[in-house]
Length: 498
Image (tube, rainbow, N blue to C red; front, top):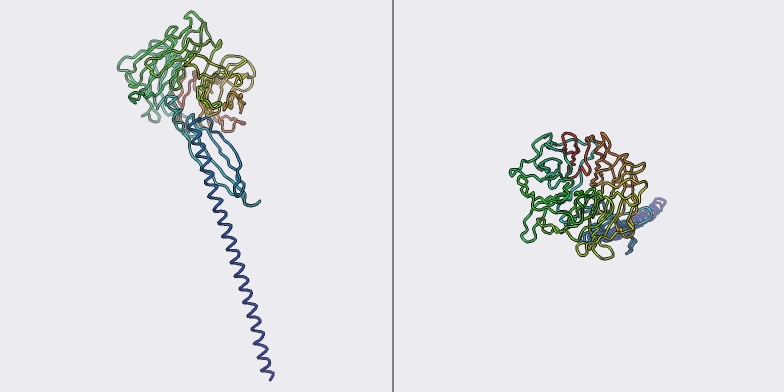
């Protein structure tokens, strides 16, 4: 009997245990199902949010691309917020690579919880084809890939006779002005090799001679509207008192041809500086300057036919020397404007900005007074470069800064200073590409300098390079080389970053 009772008791206890185990398994299974369902819901929500963020990031870039076609300089960094199912932070970061290229990065970020933040980032390049054409193709297509902490000579050569007076590089062809016949040299560097020290300058088979010292030049690639034929011209500001402008057809570099010369209107040959001093091409216009002289210093030509430049108006009296200019087009107040930025000798306005939109109609320049920069001291503005909405100014050596950066996004509202640096010498030439500022200076043994301008609040020196007596505006850039000229031998040096 005891055995039987014991047996029945054992069976009842076993059933209870089995029931407890079954319930435990059921609870675990239900909990797992709940977790899976919840996780799937979280994944689904994250996936939907992620898709929306990608769409928003793409839309930011497409909007920037569309805006760049209308006003390339107006594409700048922005931050905004938007709310859909959750709040998004939308950021567009724009880095100016060259005059005609920007790097645009869109980032959309959001928070799922205080401990969980997510983001989507997309990047693209924006190019300014219209701007490149307006500059005559003289617009770098890519930034430098080197770090420029040890610049070296890639190739070099020396003109003879004479000393170089001006330089411009276009599509790996270098044009040099000189103070002795033939006064104009062409170096073909398309096939140069590392270590080459001669043979870059071509020999003219037609015995070309410009006939006058070159003070400045601007080489352009020109597409003939009627035929689509591609020609190359060099506009020259000459040292002549009576024919300050010359135009050279260099389509055949071995047989350059002077196709036009012009005298500037209302410039007295008996004045102090009647010679051509600076020249700059933009779109269908050519701007030719003299130094401060008796008569008018600023002249505009219609060069829609480069072989027949026509001066518009009678020139404009500036009463100062304009040492360098940069020309662009901006949408201001919904209207396309042609804007000219000037580095000048005026003590109270080392930077002046003018609206030149009506130059072709009434021959007038209208100063945008709000953009005028009166910098400390009386040192002149010497060199200028415009990259996107940032205007860079090189100045005569002063007790303070010699390199300045301004925000020129809308000059009618003024140009706030974004940064500056004490170079310790006059900045006589300036080219800005990506995060590098390439400077020609007057400092002995440090005539060529590379500065890091990525952080405008802390512009820092990367490297000095000894280039004896580099000339004013004596540097130019084309990927991935610096073309420099001066009075030392060799007087044409092509530098690179190994």
